[in-house]
Length: 216
View 1 (cartoon, rainbow, N blue to C red):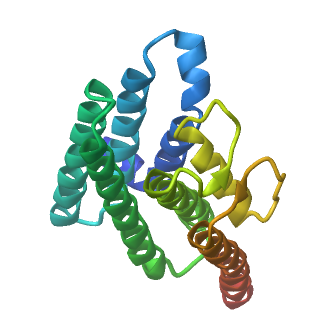
View 2: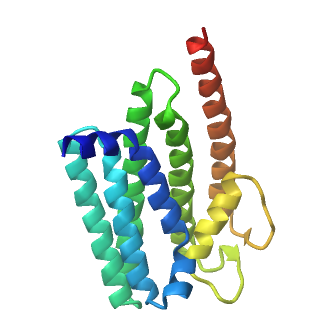
């Protein structure tokens, strides 16, 4: 058990990163497995919660992670069992936003304690960037829920498309296939663009600073 604990602590960011990437590939899992999308989402979301809980530094923060994760999973399951319930959708979005925001807070607390360049220091910022993209997707999905005319979208709209749009926004790729139309949607897109660029600039600056400090 001690060796297992040491392994999980050493590779916790890598495990969390793999789980989040797996979550982002949910549409592929649905098409390959033939399972209902709701079942795949719940399975992948559970893996994200379990893996991300490894970031927690102590039992107290890990317990909070499990509680927030359980609440988010509960509302996800209830939403898929009652797809016409607007209340379940709102609760699912709010609980997911709180959960991934908490993940970001835990990640920042852990990264502040790292004093030298190692595997955790390299993978941690990548994981944080993906958490940021997921949070952006939640915000875009909520905006679309409040006002379905907020975005110019294809006819086959799914919730996943907002996470796709979030990542192309924070990376400032801008393919043009999705366009924010309302001031609210444009404002959130603008903020995410700025945060994405500053995030990359700050991470690179911190990385170079630590490299210079440890360089003999």
